[in-house]
Image (tube, rainbow, N blue to C red; front, side, top):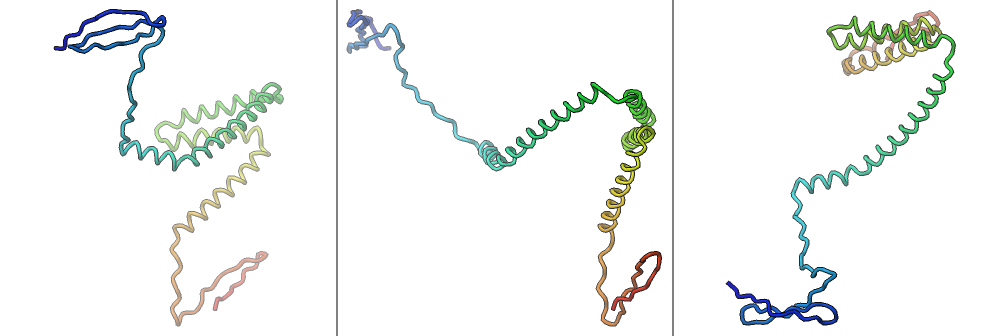
Length: 195
C-alpha cells in the first residue's frame, strides 16, 4: 500500500495549489475552481462485424431505388391530396339522388359479403358483381362502356394465356406440303395454301 499524505494548500493567482506526498515524492497540483481537470480518454470504435458490413453494402446498393421510391411516394401524396380535395368538393354539392344511389350500391356490396360465406374467391366475386349490377342499374351508359372495356381486357388475357399454353409449331418435313389457312373477308370464306 502506498503512503499518501495531504501536505498543504496555498493560493497562487487565486487558484489553490496542493502539495501531496506520495511515498517519498512530493507532487504539486494546481486545482481550478471553475473547470474539471482534462481527462485523457480516447474513443475507440468497435470493429464492424460481417453483418454490419453487409447491411452497409446493401444500403449503398439500394440507395438509388429508395430515393426513387421516396419521389414516387411524394408524387402519390400530392395526387391523393388533389383527389381528396376534388372528392370533398363533389360531396359538398352532390348531384340529385347521389346518396340514395350510393346507399343501394353499398348495400349490394354488403349483401354480397353476406352471401359469400366460405370461399375467398366468392368473397371477391360476389360483392363486386352485386355492386356492379347496382351501379349499372343507376348508370347504364357508363356500365356499357365499362362492360366493353372489361370484355376486351378479358379477351386479351385469354389470348395471352392461350399463346403461353399452346405448343410451339413443329418444323416441316422435307416432302410435306404447306398448311391450309382460312381467312374471312366480308363474310366470304376463302382457302389459301401456303407453299
